[in-house]
Image (cartoon, rainbow, N blue to C red; front, side, top):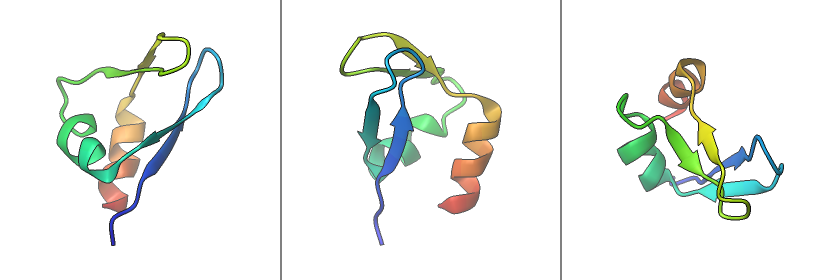
Length: 58
């Protein structure tokens, strides 16, 4: 079952729906440091703990 992930912007607080494909392809890659908010265009870092939690739930 494909599921989407919900991330919240650290700056404006707006939830970001990230499709499973993007999470598997990019977020688990150690060279990808984060994502940009669609609302405020600020960078949101993805930490190692977040990567580990995502990897466990795939």
